[in-house]
Image 1 (spheres, helix red, strand yellow):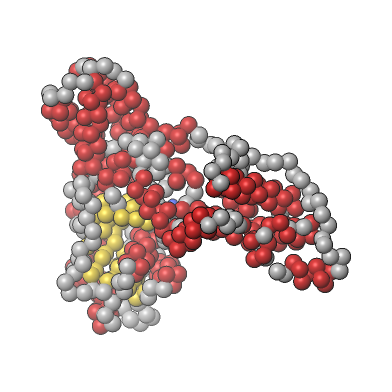
Image 2 (cartoon, rainbow, N blue to C red; image 1 turned 120 degrees about the vertical axis):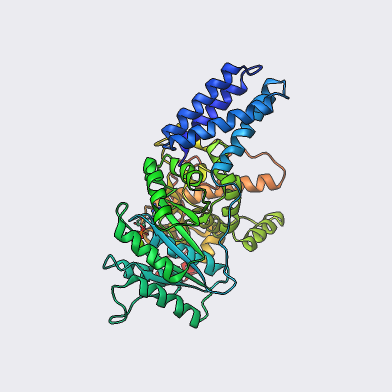
Length: 479
Ligand SMILES: Nc1nc2c(ncn2[C@@H]2O[C@H](COP(=O)(O)OP(=O)(O)OP(=O)(O)O)[C@@H](O)[C@H]2O)c(=O)[nH]1
Ligand SMILES: [Mg+2]
């Protein structure tokens, strides 16, 4: 998302920063470049024009008091940044909880936009904060829509209210109303109503959605929209705004290759804030939408705030503190610690997702397009460590030939893969000892990242098992 837009902004500003004093012609060419970049990202023309007009007016004001070229470029950058934040909806708004629970959230949007997935994500997000959500299946259009929501609900332990045979089957309005009544009687504090999607702007389905709205009087109607929608964003969001009305927008599939124009157009045209962002198929691929963070990403400054939050979530703080204490006390970093770190890293997401959050990451991603960040190397490394006994993880030196053969078999890999890992791990461990002892490690060998560490030649295990007795050996290896 936004990679090419971000690369264009970065290049426009780096050429502006390289000028001495900024002339009117420099400004014009910068605006032209920004305009072109936004249009190519599918931002609606009227939004682009309003944006450029605002930026040029504010820049002129800012420049009237600044003399030096680099300060001028920075002032324009600040103006563009704040205008981007503004068209993305300004300060993020949160769901308004009703004074009389349950708080009712209704989802509306085109077919396949991601409503049912979002229903699960919202339920999980709010349940994790101590709320008691109930999911209501008011999509009775597709035969398996109810089952889909039930599967989602089960996976997060959130109950789903669905019509029972003979009880208002086929009537989504009655189902939605009964669902809210049920939530009231059972004291759920939140109801999330999933509705049927529509292929295009379908009058019947639009009426169904507005009937559901009138029946359940939602506190929030969220318009769920696929970020890939491109230029159709304007027409579709206007149709939903007129047909059903909505209080906030949820952008889905932000993990895809969409050019991102929808994000910039919708909030600006409908004057409704983007409240949440959906970034993958997993129920945890979801976050509050922060306009400042998105603007920062578009401008090539990355999203370090989200990265830090994800790291905090992924790395168990107790474990991290223990590891730090262990390191300080002179104890060795073990394969068990390494496994913890690898698991936390995989929880943070794919390398390309993480790179997109680093300053300049968008550009890096463009430059390294197609480069193979070997995510499967992490999976293989985890499989090897997981096939080890606790003792082997603590004391890799016990790893003789037969243990290595057993581990390779358990992980479904070759003995040379196990050898490789153990060798690289030993190199990393040695380097950490050198750092701790104030020495300068020889090179950065074995940074702990198996995919990045240089591979030493495969050394076959030298020693045979200590014990020739198979029973004794099995006992030895079970430790
Ligand atoms: N990559 C990605 N896929 C998503 C995201 N959200 C939903 N999907 C996928 O998009 C497809 C459609 O999602 P649904 O949640 O069923 O969409 P819906 O709006 O309920 O569709 P209808 O019920 O047919 O109107 C599914 O395959 C989801 O897994 C997202 O943020 N990223
Ligand atoms: Mg659905």
